[in-house]
Length: 197
Image (cartoon, rainbow, N blue to C red; front, side):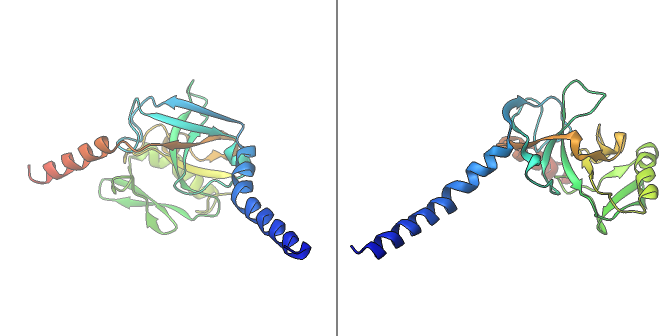
């Protein structure tokens, strides 16, 4: 093999190494700690239930942006333990409250927000009052560094409907979990059963 061919082979293998192995190495530099935790409470049920195990990746958002749909741990002053929530709106999303038959719906980018089961979030007057402060103060746009985080309970839980938008510093970890298909199946079977009740 000629020297030129050897150099090309080494260069090609180096490039492949960089493409395959470098991204996970760099990604892990952001993560300061990974903890296995047990969920307390049902605010994300049936997606994640009380007692389910999750992994919390602390420091993940030091190198990655927070995205709509991310499941996160939120530091909340009223709780000893962090809350597990879903990010429903990110900076620069439009955000409005709309009167509905039995309460108020949340619209993000013109779409009615729905929970994991496809039910629209429907807020009572008190929870609407909390979010309307942000809607008015920021002219219906989620400001830089602020996020709307919700549970899966369509009437709201201990989430942004109670304490308002949260800052990036309050989102302390990205959450990963294994889906509990038996719980999801139970939920869908119960929904199906209720249709024919």
